[in-house]
Image (cartoon, rainbow over the protein chains, first blue to last red):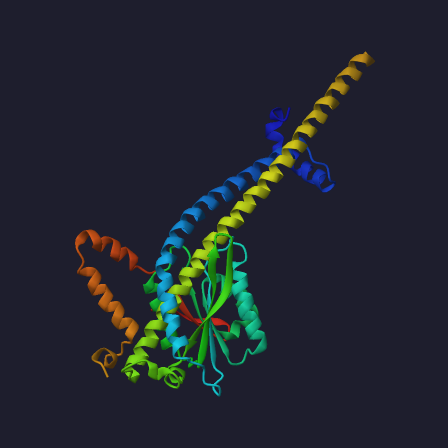
Length: 293
Length: 58
């Protein structure tokens, strides 16, 4: 019955808006809504497929990268490196990405940093990797950001990305005494936890009490190793972050499709009920019209 | 002090240059994959006082 009034559609739509404000849903509005929810479901479903494929790749690559991160961590643990107490300058590196729609991965990293900044925002500087952490942090703690990186998350991170970042951090004017990398450690498809990795300055490494367990170290070797280990730690944490992000996006999109499915069911039910009501009303009109003759 | 550090490089630059040369020296069938692993897209911007100060790609 609506097909005949095709060229009146804008007028009808305007009327419809007023009607909807009053809480009346016409058949046309329900079908429009139904169509849009169906489209959304299609989109979320295909996003889920895409991130499932990306996740499989990220997980495979992460498995290869984990030894790099663990190996690098060992050095600091074995040498018992601790930051020098009297220099408070601290650096925090937030590992996120540019892309959203992936649950709380970015916010949990940002929240961790925000809690730290709430304690001491004078001596702490932040390096934001990925647009998301920058967007969350720049409003409150914009002055603490010394560096921001983007174009992360579209493609899996490479070691060259990490080494560029490490290079930029080392060459920046900020002389930090201790630092940490905040990232999401991938646990399983449905879970990750936000963790930190320590980063130290050259001075605190050379002052480490158990450095002597390593043989034939001179300043040159220590400095070179520190530079390289920063790049490795960044690479490792970027990989962990990318993997958690994809797995979390997969779950988020799965939930979104499920919710859209529920909405479609409800809307279909209302659509059918309303259609029945319209038919009944028309019949009543016809019958009462005929009986009035 | 090593020669590369005197030239203003740090170990990251030095090892990346070495890695690049190694990739170029691979056999053609392996080289394509290795070079694909080495590309980079990251953009780094310096910030000061809550604002980006200059667009710079390292």
